[in-house]
Image: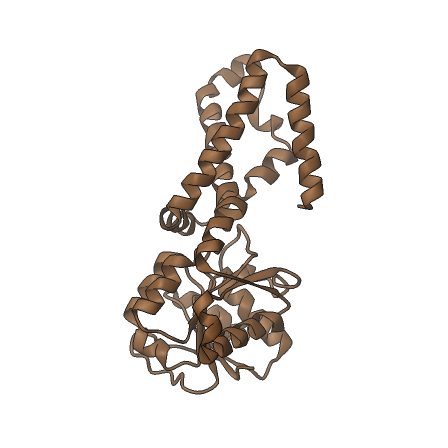
Length: 298
């Protein structure tokens, strides 16, 4: 296992990883970098990191048994790879937590960062900042580790992939191997589309509230009084980082647009049944969805 870890990005996820590592093995040295000095100070004061990286001058000696984890939005991860390739190549293994994988892993290969292994811990929060870090966030959750077909015939690559997997297992995660293309296609449906729908639902209701503003007093009602837990649960993730989700929607656009097209088809089917008042067909379709969801197990 790694005896030193460098975390680039000390927001919610970076700080949560640092805390999870320290909880498992306090002897592992953790160095951290963040563009916000306040995040570095906070993490040092809480004992989440042992020292600060100076990424601009690459003064940290990352040779040896060292892991670098990039905890940043996808576009920032690509930029870090572009700017600090030589720095990263000195580490034993470099990984990331990006929600898309093809663009990130392809860029790492172009930059000849042969020790890069893409990862995607399937967990997170609508909260941000190291002060909201959750050291138990990773327990029992899945982490996707990218393993392409050509990696299977390269012993050096296979070793680095397994070391990356061992790290995520150490902090309590279940490791799932996938190619980058397959990952991006699947998460477009299981993660990216739900976030997009949450943004759309929030925006639709907000537009309704603005449209009805002024009429509330006439009707003697307050629209917010009509919002229940169901709406709050469905739109909670719409509070997630706009920068992060802009990156994801743009960088995985082809897969997301395909998932949105499928969603639109499904929505139009239900819309048609509602318009025609076809109670029986509507009930059958809703029941089918509920039963199929139960069978699949999510």
